[in-house]
Image 1 (cartoon, rainbow, N blue to C red):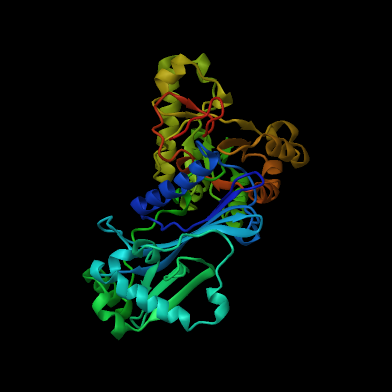
Image 2 (image 1 turned 90 degrees about the vertical axis):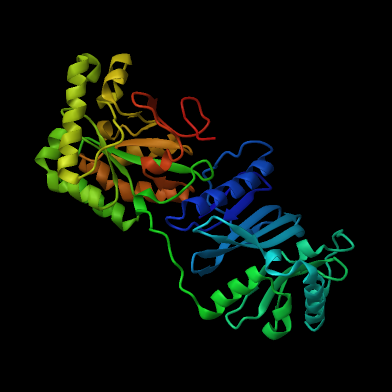
Length: 435
């Protein structure tokens, strides 16, 4: 995933989640949010901007996270953070940590070396880089400390498949001067055998033997982990189906690898159970749009309950899914409805009015003018004109930097209350946030 902030000195980040690794992904989110919050001087607000490659930054901060090892239940992550000022690197860090997905335990690179022998590793690294071409040692003209601690020197330690000790540094281990770029040296396995800690020996053995990664049970694509407090999300939602147009829409969404939320009417589900089942089978979220699209505000509590329950039963029978959300027809709700429905009410903050114009040249610009990070977009999958505009809409939203998500993804981490109404995520008026 990639995101960036606005302004002349943006923060740009690229990172990798692991499907099904809930604790790992949450820790990664917390680390990234701490960086973005610090840069914002408060709470980070996601921006809908195409991500600028970090290499193109002349001013700002770039953060890159990548998975560098996956063996057994252990994941190795490299975090590189670089600050640029006027085209020059003013700060840089390179850190590798190892996490056991089974226990949640995290091991830092320095823990792979026996504490009493970190000085030996420093000497070996110093000898190794002295044999490299001279440009690698030319320090930058930026002010730097006169020395570098063992803990700071050994932030990026790994093992090669042959068992060599790999150490990446960005400061001269003797002078502490910043190097023009990170330098990685590989130290012979035999010469470093005595300096490796028990934790390091276990990891090196796993790397040498090539122990396969025991991946967690993957999360279904429409529920894949994403943090909408970190990146700009928008949820595509479609009302009133299912019908033949829904089938057309499924093909568009599949082609563009987008997952959406369908608020389905119980009556149409009964008439088109195969289409409803196809929506669920494709990984989309199915939600409740009442049985007959009645104005719930004009009904008695018993009739409101019947409308909701009838649609719940029809959807579950056709798809096996028990909907977790209700969208009251016409967005019409009140205290009586709230007390009677038994489900969170999900409305919208972007009304496409697609049913009125039935013209993508009209409703697409309207959507793009209203959408913001955390938006819920209302459309109707029963109109051919709406389906005709979806490929273009998806391209425009992605091009603007939006991640397109389902409602479970948009509201992840937020406890939605039965009867309460929700229309967007974030800090904008009327929205809700997990932080």
